[in-house]
Length: 320
Ligand code: NAD
Ligand code: ZN
Image (tube, rainbow, N blue to C red; front, side, top):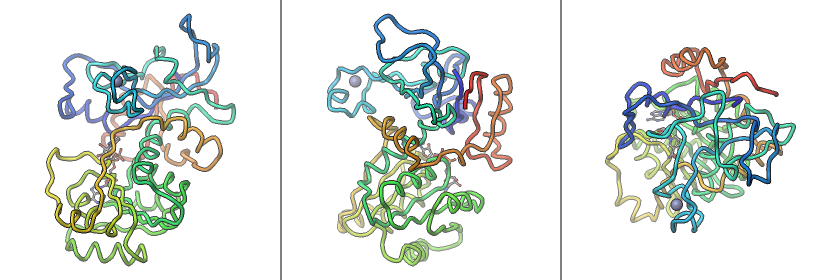
């Protein structure tokens, strides 16, 4: 293994011991945003050779159920996903993975970028679910790693104006550097109607597409209320299991609400975006640690100190 990013879910498992129905009952190796160098091959593997640098798509589905056959393998009930209990993750020196879920990195793509294909694939999937196209106005709610990768992908897919929100100015500053046209610092004292109005002013009209990457109820409500009639609101953020939303408003204005769960058939596209230079994920990597300092890496991610966007553990094999 070469590089493993730390995801909010890794930190959540460490701190809370569970996410929804997934409960950590025994010690579990973390990590699912990863890349490595092929050390050994299964006897039937033809598409790789020892020494190949690969990005690892962390979920391996059953390949035979109807979801898998339809290509929506992220919905497979038997998917084996790194660091989702009881399955161990990839934050270790050696790790075995199905070859058809490994992606060979071209020479000019670094192993760090390879690890970043995981969150980037979430952004690719979200933007595909949103059907983002040329000239569209896009609203993104939340400027954490997922909001930021969605921003990068939406731009690459032709969005002409992107407005992004957050509660934290520093994250908005990064979004601006990454190409957001306008940013909006959400203040808790403002009313919902005022916020919708402000968003429409910043977008210049009502956004065609909205992606919620915060999971906050207030944001999910905005995703519906701010999106133009006939538009699409995509929900990526996972907060409370139940939220109160203005569903009738969505109904009468035909705003489609679409969920996003990880990704399916998006890794190759994520790699293509990076390899062709259409998307630069490097500015999202703000912290680097050695494997031996993994605990410190988690501590930093947990506390958010030093304005972490993405912490990453390097496992000694990195060849940039
Ligand atoms: P993060 O916590 O780093 O980012 C969330 C951002 O939203 C933060 O910057 C926070 O300040 C901001 N925020 C919170 N409340 C807000 C509000 N009311 N308005 C605007 N911004 C607000 O997390 P992340 O890693 O970027 O992930 C984002 C969300 O996506 C999380 O809920 C995560 O669980 C979820 N997620 C979902 C999938 C999926 O497959 N659906 C995959 C990965 C992550
Ligand atoms: Zn399946």
